[in-house]
Length: 222
Image (tube, rainbow, N blue to C red):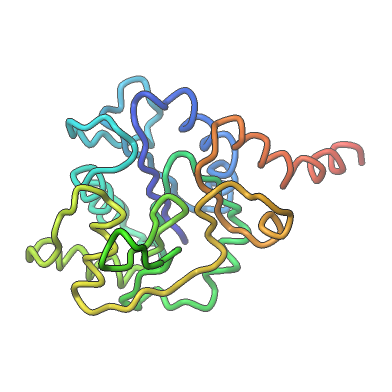
């Protein structure tokens, strides 16, 4: 079982968020996984949109939204997921590849998995959350314990805040190469990638067609 934490915004309800719902998220739900969307309000949205009521309308990330999202995902359901994955609303997820990619990892481990890199503009490495930050159940529970005990510092950007919460508590990042922080530029990325970031809503539909369109056509013609 996997729970997706999709950080979005009211202004993208009919574009990015709609594209997510109608493409990869539908396949995830059909597999029995959970997908929740976190936005400023839930006005006019389906029941799986969770209102965070924070003042910043940007989907680029702020700490209030992400902490409310993580807490809801942790507490929402009696049957806990093995993994919790935060993605942006401009990210496409190949859920079958994600399922296979997660197999070697322990759901009870205190770990953070992602596209974790060092940058010249920050003294500490971090995990880029747009393409996916993956927390095993044990990692999410430990992070929320640190947060409640004020052992996590808010940096004003959810990727940094989540990453540094682990880094500052002496947890080594786990690099996952299958999470791509940008659109695919060569066919090898399309073959290997589990997630792709910085897509328009039309890109989302186009990518879904590339992955599954021919399969659907074959089934319909039998």
